[in-house]
Structures are given as C-alpha cells and as structure tokens.
Amino acid sequence: MVGTVKTLLKSVRQYKKPSLITPLFMVLEAFCECLIPFFMASMVNEVQASATATMQPILKYGAILIGLAALSLTSGVLAGRFAATASCGFASNLRHDLFYKVQKFSFANVDKFSTSSLVTRLTTDVTNVQQAYQMSLRIVIRVPLQFIFAIIMSFTINAELAWVFLVIVPFLAVILFSIMRFVMPFFRRIFKKYDALNASVQENVSGVRVVKAFVREDYETKKFQKAAGEVRNDFTKAEKILALNNPIMTFFINLAAVLISFLGATAIIKSGTLDGAFSTGDLSALITYGIQILSCLMMFSMVFVMFTMSFESARRIGEVLNQESDLVSPENGVKEVKDGAIRFENVSFKYSQKANKYALSDIDLDIKSGETVGVLGGTGSSKTTLIQMIPRLYDATEGEVFVGGVNVKDYDLDTLRKEVAVVLQKNVLFSGTIKDNLRWGDESATDEELVRVCKLAQADEFIRSFPDGYDTYIEQGGTNVSGGQKQRLCIARALLRKPKVLILDDSTSAVDTKTDALIRKAFADEIPNTTKIIIAQRVASVEHADKIVVLDGGKIIACGNHDRLMKESEIYREIYEAQTKGGSDENEEGGAL
Image (cartoon, rainbow, N blue to C red):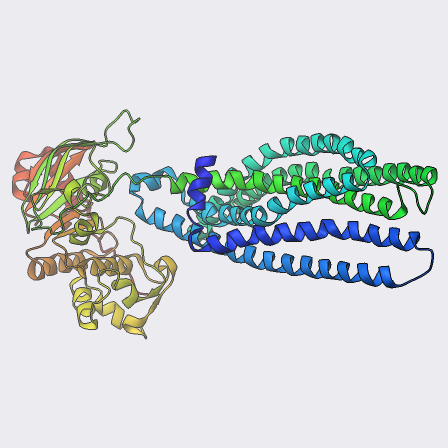
C-alpha cells in the first residue's frame, strides 16, 4: 500500500504548497479550540472566587475567548480553502495522469482492464481518493492533535478525574474498530460491483438500437436492477453496521459526562465550592474536554471508513498508473520509414503467455512497396491479428516483422503508426463535424485536401447531399450516418495521412460492389506507390490484387495472385465458386442518411 500511496502522491505536483499549509492551520485551529474551555473555566473560577461582583474578569477573559474563537474560525476557513484547492487539484492531476496512461497502453494492456472498470477508476475511485486526501489534510491532522491537546488539558485541570477518559477511550476504541473491521469487506466488494453496474449501463447505451429492435428493454432493465441491487445491498449492509457508531458514541459521551459530573460534584462538595481544589469551572471544562476526546474517536472512525473505501480505490488507480505498456518506443528509435515494403519472418503470436494455442503460427510473407495485397480467410482465421503486427499494435511472440526494411521494434512508435494507416474492422467516428473527424488524419489539412480524399473514398457525393455538407455534425459513435457512409469516412480519414502503408480491415463490407470497385480503382490510380493490404470477405474485393493471402487457423495455406490460386488452391477456388455462383455480390448499399 505504501508503494501505491507514493505513486498517487506524484500527482500532487503544483499543489504541494496548499497541501503543506493546510495542516499548519489545522494545528492552530485545534490548539485554539482546546484553549477555549480552559479559559472559560478560568473565568468561571475567578468570578466565583471574587468577593465582590465585578465585570473585570468577564471582560478580560471574554476578550481572550473572542480572540481565540476568531483565530480558530480564521484558521478553519483558510484550512478549508487550501484543502479544497489541494484536493481538487490533486484529483484533476490524477484523472489526467490516468487518462494519459491509458492513451499510452498497448492493446494487450487495455485487454487487462475492461472499459467499465477504467471508467469507474477515472470517476468514482478518483472521487473517493480526492475526499480521502482532503480529509487527511484536515481531519487526520486535526483529530490526533485535538485528542492529545484535550487529554493534556484534562490532566492539567484535574489528573484524578481525567483518568475517566483514559478508562472509557479503550473500550470505545475497541468497539469502533470492530465495527470498521466488519465494514471493510463490504466496501471491497462494492467496487467490483460498481464495475459490473457501469458495464451494464455502457452495454445497454451502446447497443440501444439492438435492444429496441429485439424488444429487450425489460430484460435489460432487470439486468440493470440486479447489478444496482447488488451495490445497494452491500451498501445497505455496510451502512447498517456503521449506523451503530452514533448511538454507541452518544452513550459513551453521556456516560463520561455523568461520571465526570458525579465525581466532580462530589469533589466540589468535599473541597468547598469557592476556594477548594476543584471548582464548577473545572467541572465544566472537563466535560467539554471529554466531549472533544470522544468526538475525536468518532471522527477518527468515520475517517477510517473513508480510508477503507479510498484504500481500495487507491489500489485500483495504482494498478493502472503502475501498469507499464508492453509496447514502448526504443531509445533513439528510427524516425523515418523508407517505403511500404513489409516482411514477416517466421512470425508466431499468442495473446497471452499463458495461452496454449498460437493465434498466428509460422508466418513468412514478403510484400513489396506499392503492392496491393488481399487477405482472405474464414472467421477466426486471425486476419486482423496478422495486420496488427505491422503498426505494432501487438508485438510478435516469436519471429520478426519488418517495414521499410527495418524491424518494427526499432521504430519510434509515432513515426511508424503515422506511416501505417489502419482502418479497423470496427469503424469509430467521434462527436463533431465531418471535417473534425477527417482531420484526425491530418490536423493541418486544407478543405481541398479533405475533398480530395473523400472523392477517393467515394464519400464526397453523399457528404454534399447533407444540408451542412462537410460541416455536418456527427453524433457520438457516428450514429447518424449509415454503416457504409461511416466506412467511407474512415477510409478518407486514413488517406489524409498520406501513409506508405494503408490497411483496410474488412472496411468496405457495408458498401455495394460498385462503390467497392470504384474505391479500389481510385486507389490504383491515385496512390500507386502506397502499399495496400485489404482484408475482405468477398473475393471480388481482392481478386485484382497483386497478391492474395489465404489464412486458415492462423497459418498461411495459400499465397499468390487470383489466376495462380484458382489453379493451385482448392480452398480459394471453392470460396470463389461459392461466392460467384451463390450470388453473394448483391448490392449492400451503405444507404443514405
């Protein structure tokens, strides 16, 4: 846990000053609050001991008490202000560090954390840590100091009666810590159930069209209610146990007051009311100190609850911050990709070291710069896995991958990925205008360049059909454009980078065959020097490629152009005949908006 705390404290950075100032004001506030009962007792004692009624002691001690109260108030306000600044700034830095860390993760790193879990860590967990940090600056400093000050002042007034507190405190401490011990397991479970709850919400919202299409609202509602109910049940159990804090604390405070009152009154009667060793003012001060001492324990118990929650949150945040990316740029990495030549040398890959089976096995493949290569294979044949080796989204478990004659592990990652543009199988658009989305490929691209790549991707025509044209707003996830339109926009975005290697991972599956052919023709005419790798389900999409790779079970079972494969590969021939005779090339028009 110490290591996790050190990791989190690195996010304090520019908020170190308010973090250090806050405890100083808390010490001053605690000191003032402990002096107030002492001077009140002195005032009462002096007034009672005075033979004549006079306002002098009242005015004297009244001024002191007002000064202490004002100093305590000022210290408390300033401490609260600095603590709020420090804790909010710390939380802001922590969220930034978490988000930045996630951006640097490789696919393998992201696979270790679910999306819902990362969302919980960035929101609920950071909020818990923020509250704990603020409490640590204020209450954690104030409580032990006030407790010590109150004990010292109690013994200063009357050591014999002050022992009442030292007898009661251990009993109360044992009870309160027992309560905390029972509560801690519930809070540990709650965070895992928060992840499940967020996953339910995320899955439902992202798939809302499917939910409505299959009329599954009731099922999704019940699933959410179950996840929410599990969180509620654990919270309820924890809160029921914590609810014992107040009545137990109240009982012991009242017990301490009764004991002090009884013993104090007895001492006053025995010693005399005016000039005895123990007075009414002393009794009043002792009762006040008793309340302070026992209240400190109660506050500490609540802090302990908050820390119990925050420790688990801190651990989860620390897991992300301490997670090192599996893929990092080498020191002095190569900053230039010579060309689009690609070579796989005896490459094998599995997603986990513990996996028994390789996703790719014994891959040897040579692609010349500027070639168009098609990749065919059934579902699960590892077509996507193969192309993810090229921009180094994953590292090969065995063997080497070369781009431009250089091992991909020797490239600066940013350089490599800028020259290898990938249109992934799952097309993603972000909220913003069409121009905003296209400029992900090149932030400085002119409007003319945007139009050029959209014409290549056969997207210009449908974009101009929108009332706002290129300024049309795209909803989150591209929900207000069709599948075919989304694919063409993603292709245009990739082309805007002017890459040396362009990879299309089944990225024309939602467009009709005519548009698919036009896109392929535009590629051949306009970007002949760019290496193009096209993963497709339709043979028609790749039959004119310079080379076609057929995958099965993570292995290359055939490689060559269309004519060669028709002669030499029975599997390719069966796929081709099944598709051409089965009429699989019917129009799959992307549709209008």
